[in-house]
Length: 323
Image (cartoon, rainbow, N blue to C red; front, side):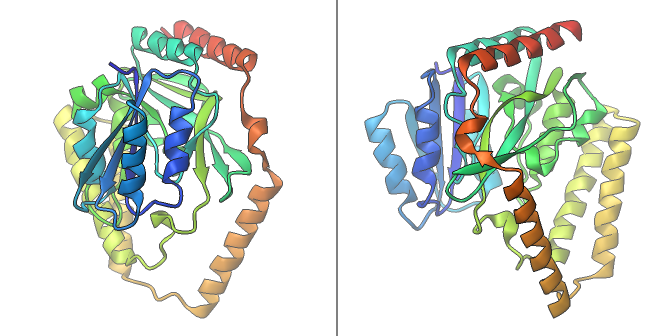
């Protein structure tokens, strides 16, 4: 049985899918499987995935009619064979030389010490993945079950490592509403339910590609519709917490987010004036310029064996000290 499952959902991702698959297959440790879940693509995505499946026994392809990324992940999770799960978008990659034998041993160590979710910092790269800058997590700490830190897994840190046992035991699933699947609630539940969670800026593996076609950049979404999805998602989450007897900040924050969505619904759809569109464009250009100034060539972010060992030893010591 493979130790690590890399799940790549894809819908019309022919431009980048091969990069994502190869970034997993080319890792130094080959004890993994790559599962490509084709969500009814109408381009060459399925053909590309089948080609890798024919050439490499570690690749499996699942395919079905279009149902959205959340439902696609949910359908694939029960079919994954690994002890750890990594969800990789089809336009992103795993950093070269990340999954080594010593990282595999580290994940075994985490299992033995009841760490069930790992929240690392993440690289954000340009379209060609030539340059990247780091997006840091807010802590370098270990948290127990039910922690307030479950609300600090921001969108920027979407690529986590999850224990397969955690997701199955707690029956954690992605939302299936479209266009907003509320992945933030999935991450929140995973961290909240984990016996222990590690947040770390010492180890990283995901490189998010700046892709102008990403769904999260679609400005044609109806904002009221998205707010309704958020309102319903947070309302359901509050009930989920009540059934678990949750009290304090965690459920109060869920209520705050629900109420913010309701207030936004009440205000209604606000037309984007020409001035607003110009301001948004300028803000986006400033954001890109700031990122570019903080960027380094992607290769400079790779940890060599010694630096990776030092990072792992520091995290393991932190886990042992927090027991």
